[in-house]
Image (cartoon, rainbow, N blue to C red; front, side, top):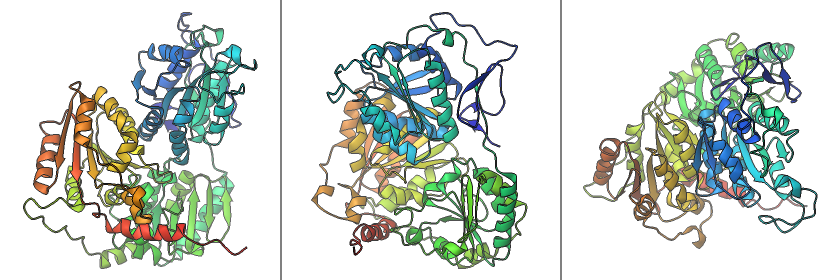
Length: 605
């Protein structure tokens, strides 16, 4: 099984391995070769946490200082392999850890008690919805204050300190409140290992007076985690594969559709292996874009109901059998519950469960194992792809712009397409960029991320910061609407301070365009900013940053040339002036269907 997370080999035990058995407890397997003995100044809770983060692949931690976490930050930054990335606010620190985890496999942020914790909560909820392992560390109250009936600052004025903990319980898979040194080692290791095993965020609160105190449990360098891999029930696996092979082999024109949970199941390669073996037409759901190579010979595009890639929906919905690997069918991905799919034709493969038609269902079957085994049992059938190839008509090009004609968004994305390579990654903000970026054809090795399940406006600024920090070899291209940018703009500052070379296309069309198409009103119009002047003010002559406004294709071409050549070592911020009604046709269709779903009258009582 593939059990690598970040840069950590979680399968092969090392000397003095900290092992996480299947019951979730943490134990230590002693070996005759001891780990490194530490000086007392290094044998502290804070240094142990720092070394653990580095071990699992986190070399950058996104922080906002506050009086409860300052000592902890001292000990984190004392770790040579761990960089402190100070963010402008906690929400962006959380979004940055989210973006970092999408590339590295795990991310981490550090904030202060309650005022910081409740501020970062929204980003942690988004990471939970997207199955991202994220370590959220909070500097907590002095250990002596627990149980004293005292009222502390940064709280809601009650002597009960558990409000923050209760808020995190629904958006994390494990919560550790570390307020004594005796069990600190166990709690920290259990929390981090649980995040890796469950691929979900965890919460660790550390009392502010504990990080710098030496303790015998931290006297040796922590040994790497060895996480017990999940395994399939072999009898269930064989039964599921036999039933699925029979179901698919009797179909005339079956298809494959990849979904977003392939990431958490670590089944992307297995899905491609199945696609190679079966010859079916291959599509992805919108939130799985980037998980499947788009240069695959049978790739037919994004299946998104009425707003699918051209000719993709027709092939998928007319198939007599479809295998969905890791799907999420919510109101957005189903375009207001309007997909023309029939359950009896579907095989639904979730990370640990397979359902065939209206039944049967096979539990304890891992997606990766199932897809690999199925690839050896299915017959090659290219009928659906041949049908696609038969009806496919190449997309037309946007109308050529007249000289100095106001720039159209479809022209913008035509030029963004030409920028993509294996050295780039695309971050798409919630809004019309969802739809325009879906139409980009990703070359081999080009990264792609967006947040569809949670859809938090403003996510992309922090996520761009985190993703770029995680993969400095790639140049991130972020497509952000003006409304979203206004929510989280401050951490452009952090990008500049970190020397990042991202290219940001700020699409200025005067409002929340995606919400206009769902339900219009005066609240969707925002105050226009001078965005380039704002970024110039943030830049303030410190670091490398270049900004420009473009109003026509000629200016866009010149700006892209500058950003990719003369200013290739700078953060490049390109403000694109667009008409407020210049939206993709997919957004118009999707918005009307989601609006209809939102406005359904109550069922009769």
